[in-house]
Structures are given as structure tokens and as C-alpha cells.
Length: 59
Image 1 (cartoon, rainbow, N blue to C red):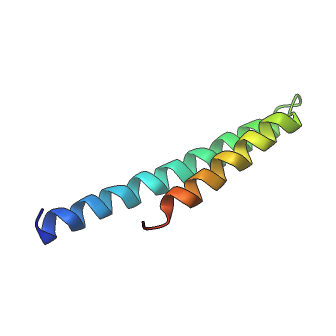
Image 2 (cartoon, one colour; image 1 turned 180 degrees about the vertical axis):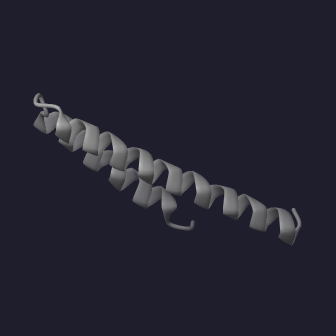
């Protein structure tokens, strides 16, 4: 893989990460709007956010 394609893949990964974070934020906001917001869903959202942060770290 050349330097250009590596840079392109890195850029694509960054875009995916930003999209995932925005999705999590949107889902969290929608969940907060709902009255039946349970602790289980809050735990799932925080777990998902934690996974995103862990996956984001360069290996």
C-alpha cells in the first residue's frame, strides 16, 4: 500500500468515527426525549461510546 492510499484509508476511518459519534449523540438525545428511558439503555449507550473510544486508539 502506498502512502497516498494509507492516508486515504486513515481519512475514511476518521470520517466513519465522526459519523459513529454523531449517531451515538443523536440516539442518546432521542432516548432522553422518550419518557421510558431506562438505565439499561443508558448502560448500552455508554458501553457503545466506550467501545468507539477503544477502537479509535491507533494500534
